[in-house]
Length: 243
Image (cartoon, rainbow, N blue to C red; front, side, top):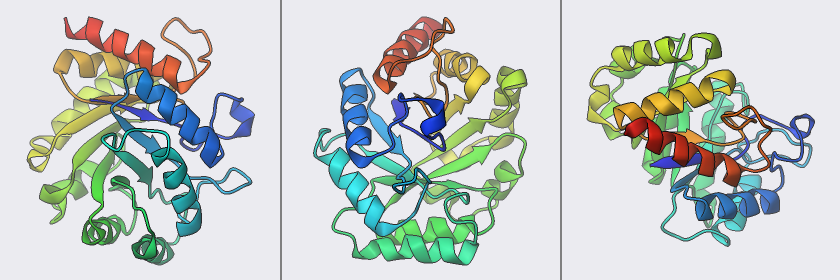
């Protein structure tokens, strides 16, 4: 499985390649799926480009993407603390999604963040799958190992955040995760570590992701023109690494 991460925390200063409006996200998602992505991860944005957990913005974003991609392709969102720093307010925001006409198929929860367990439980109660974000260099793996929600998550996102030691950090993170409650693992890196970690995922036969959120350049260093171009390159790199 190769997930496309459409935009992440990036904004207008990162260039026109970053989709910021629901319509742009939907178009980018459709093109990425046509290029081979089988899952979508998106950060809904306010009109000023800030990540948000607002149910209104979430609904507009999901409705736009759902109108452009096949129903069989799951669409997920973030619940990162940067979108709502206060844990109690973040939990209230997620619970407010219950009134929406459309819900995400899954949502990522960063296990090192305060309130992660409560947010994960709220999502599961809504019938939304949970991607357990376990970041390298944090106590996320330790917290996840003790989590009562661990066996119920959809998958683990093993997120390598240090590009300078990406492959070593990825291997260490996988070791920390161990059996990961028996859940599937999606391994990915960021910026300078994105392509080395994607290749490692290919060698290990793990799911991975690629997109503007994680990297803005192609494997040869050229600026990417779209998420679809990154997905096509990612599939090629993955396949070669898996040989």
